[in-house]
Image (cartoon, rainbow, N blue to C red; front, side, top):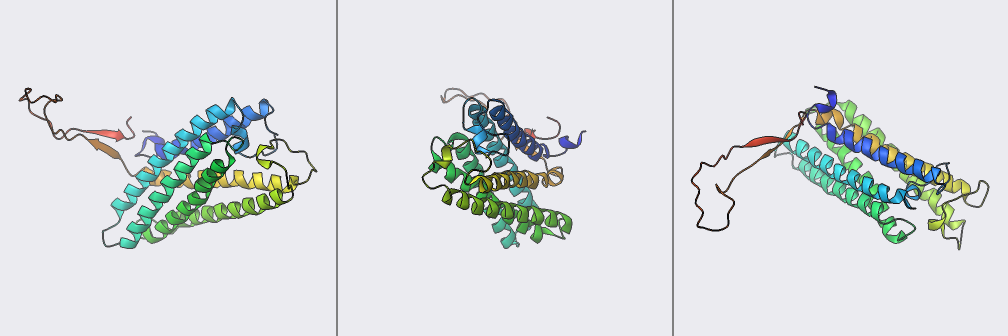
Amino acid sequence: MWWFQQGLCILPVALVLWTAATFIFAYITAVLLKHVDPLVPYISDTGTVAPERCVFGIMLDISAYLGIATMYVRYKQVQALTVEEESKLHKLNLLGLVLGWTSSFGMCIVANFQKTTLFSMHLVGAILTFGVGALYILVQTLVSLCMQPHVHGKSIFWVRLSIGVWTFASIISMFVSSVIMYSSLPGVDVAHKLHWIPGETGYIPHIISTISEWSLALSFVSFFLTYIRDFQKVTLRAEVDLQSNHLYDSPHYSITAQVNQSETSPLMAGGI
C-alpha cells in the first residue's frame, strides 16, 4: 500500500495538489495570453479574463469541496479522540468546522464572482476565504495545543503555530500595502487594472500586496499538509440501513426476502 492510500490522507493531498494546480494553470495561461504581467500578479487577476477564468472557477470550486470534506473528517477525528468531559475542546472543534466551511464557501464566491465583474462580491469572498480561513487555522492550532501530550506531541502544535503566524503576517502585509496602493491612486479603477509599469505610482505597494497574497495562499496550502500524517490513521465507512425490503411506494408489494441490515462498505479508504 502506498503512503497516500493509508486512511484518508488522500483528502488533504488532493486538496493541496489540486489547489496548487489551479493557481499554476491560471497563472501560466494568463501570462501566455498576455492578460497579466509575468511578475507576481494577483491570484484573482489570473482568473479574471476568459478563457482561463472559466477553468479557474471550476477548479477552485472543486478545491472548495475538497476543503469541506477535509475539514469535516478533521472534525470527526478530533471528536472521536476526545472524551465528552472535554467540553472546551468540543466547542473549539465545532467552531473550527463552522469557520472552515465558511472559508470554503468564500472560495466559491471568489471563483464565481471575478473582481472585474462584481468587485464587491469578490471582496466579500476574499474576506471569507482568507480572513475566516486564518481564524480556522488559529482554532485548529488551539485544538492541537489542547490535544497534546495525550493525543500527539508538541511538534505538530509548533508547526501549526508557525504556519498561523505566517498566515497572519501575510494578511497584515497585504492589507497595509493594499491601503497604501489604493490611497496613492485616487480616481483609478484599480480593480480593472491588470497591467502595471515599473516605476509608476503605486507600483511598489502593488508588488508587496501581490507577494503577500501568494504568501498567504501558500501558508494555507502548507497548513493542510500537516493533516496528512493525522489522516493516515482514520478511515471513513458508509453503512446502509434498509428500512424496507423493496423500493415500491404501493402497499400491494410485499416482498418477503430478508433485509440485509448490516451491509457496510468503505466510503473513502485506501483501497479505492
